[in-house]
Length: 228
Ligand SMILES: [Ca+2]
Ligand SMILES: [Ca+2]
Image 1 (cartoon, rainbow, N blue to C red):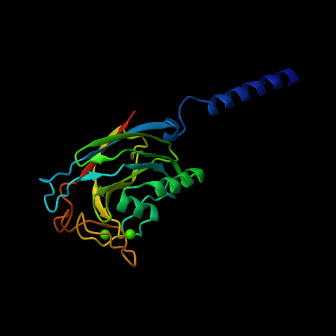
Image 2: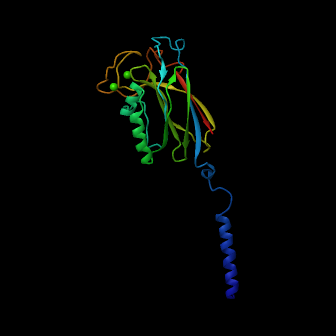
Image 3: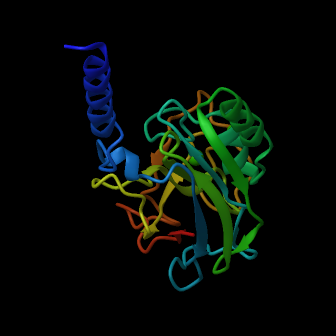
């Protein structure tokens, strides 16, 4: 075989191999998942003196929502676990100063992609924030204080924006549960501050004035998540 024939064969082989590797067919589903998406997150209050009449407070409202996209190393809150001081501050006062500082650190440490903070919402009002997500940071969590109250909040933890078919969710609506952060022992909306010592874990609210003995029904709020 001449040198020229060998070279030609080599070129044919390399070309054939390259075609195989650089084919247009995705190797797996992951390559079809967009690397950066945006979602509109809309919080809607559904709380009034008819839905939850017991002790319904004047100036019933929700504190500004705190929304974050993150991975599974970052936890905003977890039932049966102790609230962070950021969750305690949010659930008792509505302020998000500590959560913002904590999650700025999570963003720096590659545990969260970003967070957004909204504005105060009347008990039947609405507020929308826009937040980004990536395949690495596809979990969405959100909290808002039920106000006024001792330490009660509503929200959602670890909603995966990627569905079972490995596609970004287009739109979903979720009725939110209500939680007691375990950090203040007041029994109704306007009770004075009674710090819970030792701190209790986060629990779903079951008892009046918000609960019916089992759950809070109907939900005090919902969120709608829409891909932009
Ligand atoms: Ca407290
Ligand atoms: Ca409590």
